[in-house]
Length: 376
Ligand SMILES: *Cc1c(COP(=O)(O)O)cnc(C)c1O
Image 1 (tube, rainbow, N blue to C red):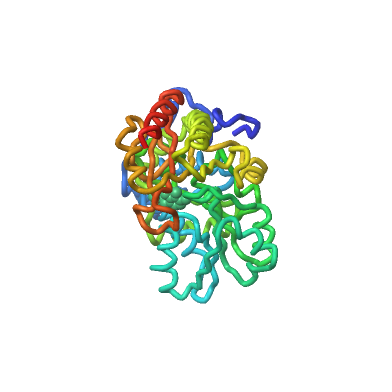
Image 2 (image 1 turned 90 degrees about the vertical axis):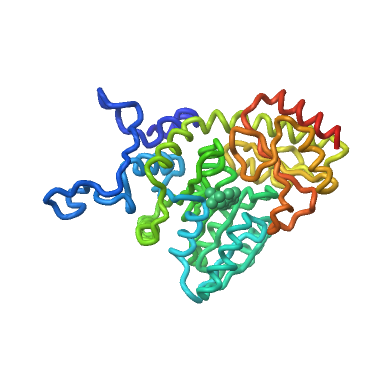
């Protein structure tokens, strides 16, 4: 792929082979678990044998995502399967692993319920603090550092390149959960991370109808380690998911552009409304994440967070709104609101909400949200 191409071109053309007359523009999914072996030993000549290790539809999808990430991609059935693989393929008993204390809740649950059971020593550092911890040598002795930037749900950011220098000096592996940004919004591998990973259930595929995740790396040894881990644990997507994931990501640039335009309008509207406090959108002037986000990231995203008075206020907002729907997850074509405290896990106030801007018309979403906020 031509690296000078823009995001719209790259979203469509990433991973595609040169066109062959008579073939479809995109290969169709190949629905098979075992393949004919004939009289050859399995995999001689690189032929497919059994789809749990890899399959043609997955190769095409992984080539596309890997090109956007600037590395080689391994796709997984969910974001958590990808994160589990990255952590479990790297950490050994007795190792210290540093995770965000304010990131995706299930990542902390994975650490508490599974990693600690295997004797991995887990340390939690808040996203706004990790830069200072790295600068004063606090990552020495760590085996793996996982960043999540912008963090979900509070949208704090940290300096990937600075933490990458510290992890390299400490001999540790740096992984970045890039779910919120997507590969078009941020390229952690180019900033010095060893692994970029995330949930493709969110904006990358973006239609709220798929579960997927992936890890990409430019390091052949880490790739081989992760591939071996996936081969033996079996958490890869089947042909239908891989095909639909690839089809869905073709529109990533268009969806992100509309979502970001709406997010800018929504952040302004929320900030001006008396029923709302604590509006966060990393590209809003004055936001604590703004300077670093505009230096490190390539484009804005569609997730905004804010605080209403309490759970009842959020409930009034949601019963009045016609377009903003109560749902968890984010990055899809529908606009949604999630009151995070209802899930437990995140240390946020009862009225804290994460708004995910969809791709409906910005004017309709703004009018609907304004009416709903006035009813609060
Ligand atoms: C949703 C999410 C995950 C987990 O992804 P699933 O596809 O739901 O398993 C991981 N990290 C972040 C930041 C997420 O938002």
